[in-house]
Each structure stands twice: as C-alpha cells, then as structure tokens.
Amino acid sequence: MVRTLVFYILYYPITILCLLVGVPLSLLHRGILQNIASGWAQVGLFLAGIRVRVRGLENIPPADSLVFMANHQSNFDIPLLLTHIPRPFGFLAKIELFRIPLFNWGMYRMNCIPIDRANRQAAVESLKQAAAKMHAGQSVMVFPEGTRSPDGALLPFKKGGFQLALQAGVPIVPVAINGTFNVMNKKTHWIKAGAVELQVFPPIDPTPLTEAEIPTLMETVRSQIASALPLTDRLP
Image (cartoon, rainbow, N blue to C red; front, top):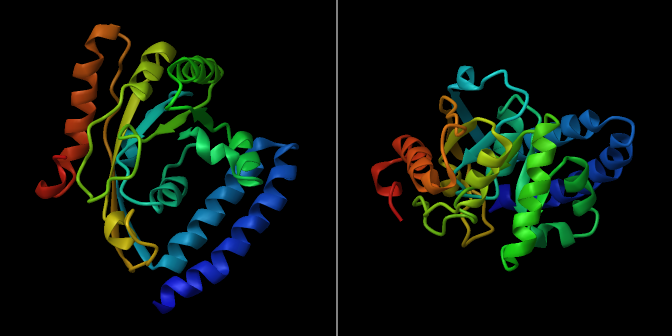
C-alpha cells in the first residue's frame, strides 16, 4: 500500500513535468522527447519496484523501420518497453488516449498513431498513414491483443498491426512480456513489486506473404510470444 501511494504521489507530477519540458524541446529535435520518455519510464519502474531481466536484444535487426509486437499485461508494459527496447518507436494506440489533454501532445510528438477501433474506415486510413511514416524510417510498437489481458492469459490477436507490417514491407519483431500482470493488472490500481522478464525474438519478414496469409503470420507471431509465457497464460 505504501509503495502504491508513494508511486502516485511522485509519478503524476513527474509525468506532467516531463510533458511540459519534453514537448516544447521536441520542436527542436524529436529525439529529445524520446530520451525524456525513457527517463520517465525508468523512474516509473524504479518507484514500482520492478526488477527486469531482458533476453534476445541481439535479435533486433539494424533495419531502419520495424514493427515490434508485444503482449499486453499491464500499464507497466509501456515504461518497460520504452526503457529496454534500444530503438526509437511510436505506439499504435487507441484513439481515446489522444483525447487526454497534454498527454496527447507527447504522443503525437513521439510519432504515436491513433487507431479508432469503432470506425473501420478511419482505422484503415490510420494504417496507411503509419505505413507512410515507416517508409520514412519510423518504427512502431503494437499490442496485437488490442487491450490489456484481464487475467494475464494471451488474448486472440487483431489484424491491424499485421496489415501495417505487410503494407510497409518491414520486419515484425515479436516481444514477450512476462510478470507485469503480477505488478499491477487491469482490475486494480495497487502496485506490487516484483520481477519481470522481457524476451525479444528474431524478426519475421512478412513481404513474401499475401493478405490472405495474414492469419498464418498472426499465428506464427502469437506462438513465439506464447512460448515465453507460463503454460497457463498461453491460451485465452
């Protein structure tokens, strides 16, 4: 309980300060905001008492643009990825997050891409814009489950991120997150310190595939991520 209170008392003001400083400085260079976001994320992991073990960073290819795909167990997945994936990237995120004042400025400046899950036409247009950014060298982090798992088990994957990788013609890098559900899950705001593992898998080239083969690609990525999770968390 004490850890949770200390976290919220300190972290919200730190978040606002990072946005107030980082967004204006990003007008000089976007990389400044990325560095500030990484520092913000490190502070969050420290305050939450999260110990991280990372494996497979050597699997991240030198390609300019990548689509990272990670399972989603907790709100702490975002600071975990910002801290331990050594590559600038934006998030493919639900449009509701872009309606939060101040926070939305930071997301746009970090090249995050809004997806309106209730409007298919708008979602398709967003994927086209994202593919254009990736052709210009931008990498993207996608949570293919579409939301946090309510019980830690891996949810079925959605097609959007895979269509993006196919349109942009860039490699998919699967990333498995194990343990953040135990730190803070979707059903609580309480924080429990603990160990977390991050496993990065070798990239998968989607370019030989067609739109009709996306389900096969989805299953390949899902199977790799599932292989790093406890047996009870591999199925919905």
